[in-house]
Amino acid sequence: METQSTTQNPETKYPQPPFPKQDQPTPGTEEKLVPQADHGELSYKGSGKLEGKKAIITGGDSGIGRAVAIAFAREGADVLISYLDDSEDEDANTTASYIKEAGRKAVLVKGDIQSEAHCREIINTAVREFGQLDILVNNAAFQMARQSVDEISAEEWDRTFRTNITAMFYLCKAAEPHLKPGSSIINTTSVNAYSPSEQLLPYAATKGAIQNFTANLSQILLMDGKGIRVNAVAPGPIWTPLIPSTIPKHEEFGKDTPMGRAGQPVEVAPAYVFLASDEASYIAGATIPVTGGRITI
Image (cartoon, rainbow, N blue to C red; front, side, top):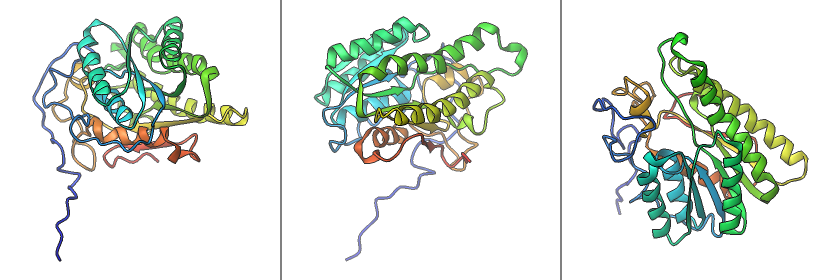
């Protein structure tokens, strides 16, 4: 009997550029994104990979963070979403609703992770609300596209580093005493760690630092006998609200990949699920690239 394959061509599975020109204030919102991003709302199906786990996702209100939150919840995890400010309230509440629909507990914590005190509050809130902490996903990031070095202010440089890498240190340091053997830290790096964009000097520099931080922290925690695995995911160009709100010429976003298109958040989330699960028990200090074919060696 002949059977028909349901496999889809990855080059044509999702929208391809050009995208319509659209302007959003930073960091952007899902509601105004055209075309709408796919976070797995209708497609992601869990199988209990994270049953009973308790997770924190920074930047979990939208984009990759939302997709990871949906996937984690459908895999059986309770999720705390950290996000920046009032402009993201609607996105955060929408993500929380998906977590609750999956039968899991959702906790929202608003505030700026540039503050070490706020980072400690995120960790303490998770432990207080969940009773334990098993997974920390450091995903929140700040970027701005600039055409020259002269356009980058000292304040912007500092904000990029404090948000993207310094906060990661604060959160890992605060979380470590609460993480038991078998727990997982997953950091979001980027294809920019391997092939930096000339328009994203501060951002790309932080992503290179995250790559080194991930590998180094992994060695430290394992050699100390903590049994905590630290890994990273390196997304390529993923269609999120951050793109039209920070990149002026976003109409052709993702066209420079071998697949010829931007990725969708739902295509990145399974990498985080895998690294957080017991199926990745022998993986530490590694980075999974999700780049649409762009090389990361």
